[in-house]
Image 1 (cartoon, rainbow, N blue to C red):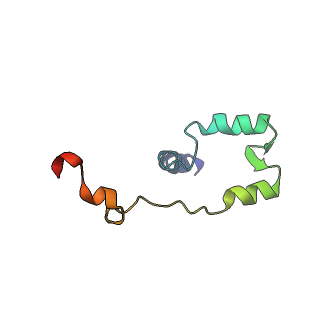
Image 2 (image 1 turned 90 degrees about the vertical axis):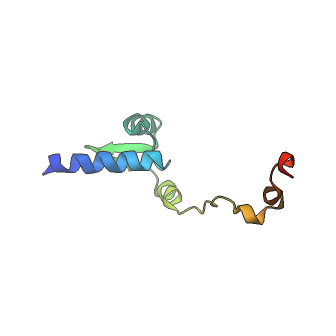
Length: 83
């Protein structure tokens, strides 16, 4: 059963990495965080040492989307050479 989960894990990891939601080299990141004392390892699992840090990192952050070109007067006019 566990062998069937690997493709889903790999696909999710790659998708999240391309969206900037996860480091590309996840294992290096986890090992480094463990070495720095941010994570503790319990068997094959990593856990945050501090619940407040985990809560802070889990919060949803509003990231503004791309600007609407019609809202910027400079973009409405276009390049000077086309005027």
